[in-house]
Structures are given as C-alpha cells and as structure tokens.
Length: 158
Image 1: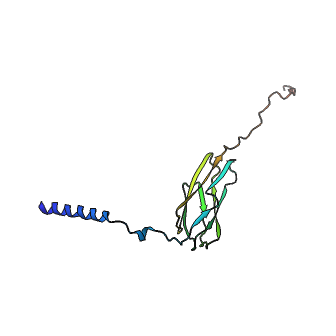
Image 2: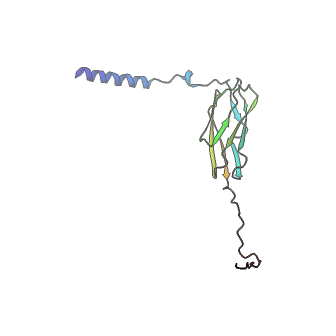
Image 3: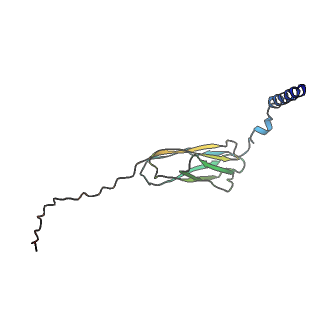
C-alpha cells in the first residue's frame, strides 16, 4: 500500500514539475524577417445576388515580408464554399490571388469564412464572404382561359 501511494505521489509531482516549466521562447516566436500576408480586403461582399448567379470570388494579397510566402492550406467553413489557393511560393513584394466559388443556389444569407494557413508570421488569417442569395424566381404559367370569347360549335348527332 505504501509503494502504491509513493508511486502515485511521484507521478503527481512529476506532472506538476513538467507543466510548471516556462515554455521556451525560441519555439514560440515567429521569424521577424519572415513572410507576411497582407490582403487588399478580408471580406468579399456579394451584396444581393440572384439564385444561381455568379458564384466566383477573389481575394488579392501581397507578401509584405522578407521571405517567400508558402500557403499550406485554405480551409472553408463549409462545403458550399470552395477556395483555390496558389501552390507556388509568393516572393517578397509579389501579389497573388485566392479564387473560389460559392453555391449560389442556396437561398438566404451568406456568412462563410476561409482560414488561410501559411508560413507567414501573421498566420492563420481568416477571410470571409458575405451577402444574400435571393429565392429562385417563380415561373409564371399562363392560366387556361375557359371563356375565351368564342362560341361553341354544335356538332350534329348521328
């Protein structure tokens, strides 16, 4: 019994000491001379858009850092938004575009986010799309006019 109590005490002491150590500052700091991603705008506003309207959007950005920018992931908040990020490194001072589409057949408000993960010192960056998709237009079918002003034709009985 004493050995079990001593073993549990040793484990608790080890856990406390391990978590009480300060985290290394060299592991948690990002390179101050590294890449930095700067967007022209972080929200693309569709405004009010017709159902099935133009689904495309673009976000222009620039590498304002001192090293090449490498985007590792662009993740949308849902499957109705599909972003496409550049695969090649963006050199310092150069611009690039994140393109994408939204399923504009979904009626209602749009409020979706895209998380852009990269080697930038300000990563991750969240950009978003907003707006409203109108319901589909109702097709108007002409009603059958029973009384169209013509006189019925009498056919003789045989």
